[in-house]
Length: 365
Image 1 (cartoon, rainbow, N blue to C red):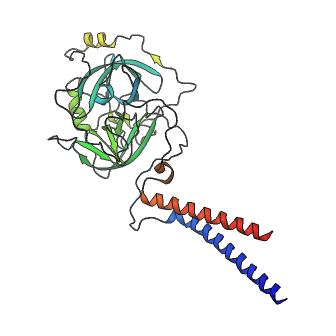
Image 2: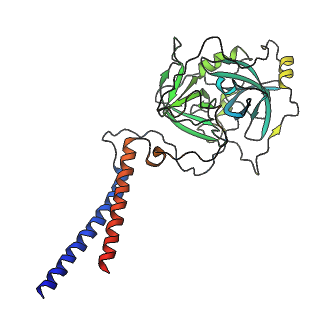
């Protein structure tokens, strides 16, 4: 009788200890979300790993399709002005530098047009494209440079899907050499194929042209540098009324919304296709058509590093419509050491709960 009581008591203590471990494991899982760094700093803007829906594209943000010798590469761009029968799109030099045939520009409403390269600047990774005039209001180029701490938004088409994401302006950087610090940097990550896309300020103005990304930061030539570059190849790009640009609501704060299209996307090419001949005949004083090529002096590659998300060599032009991307440790556990530690602790807690639940179930039989 004493042995039975002792055995029962021992089992009762074991059962209670197993229940206690389960409860502690559950409490650990509940407490993990509130654990973090000791410093009470606001979190950096982050991109959801699971998209909840497709945002409505900004009507003036375009996809640039560049046929190369053995493939077609993709980048992004922005309509910044219209003049007579033509429009002006600004993008990156490295997006169009390997073009082997007519560059195509596609608007989110389905309008598709050929493009002619008016000029390029490798140092600041800029390219100006003349296109047939679309029925879209251009984006006004900001007169005031963005300031550190200001919220900025990048937009682009990545591997095919439009995305706009915001982050804080952190500083200004130089592309290298003796060049001035005229590339604005913000705390947000770009994707392959976003290259050449806009950097918007909160008024919906073009604050910069996205150049490259690495280590959780994105940089691009700021609006003053963009304006200076375009002034040499185009009538003053100031025809857009900034008061009109900011009407309505959209994926970018202060940017006009566009009605979503109903039905599948079908490119609508302009009835005239020879953009080279037309621009040469109509734009008085415009430079002759040029083939994108390397300048006589090499340009800097300021974002090439081992931990860079994207570099100038693989950002826009190497974007392809491929299958799902490779699953990596950071895509599962997070980017920072804190997120990875939380993930490991959560996994340990789940494993401990499962083990003790199985032991409890086996002991009760």
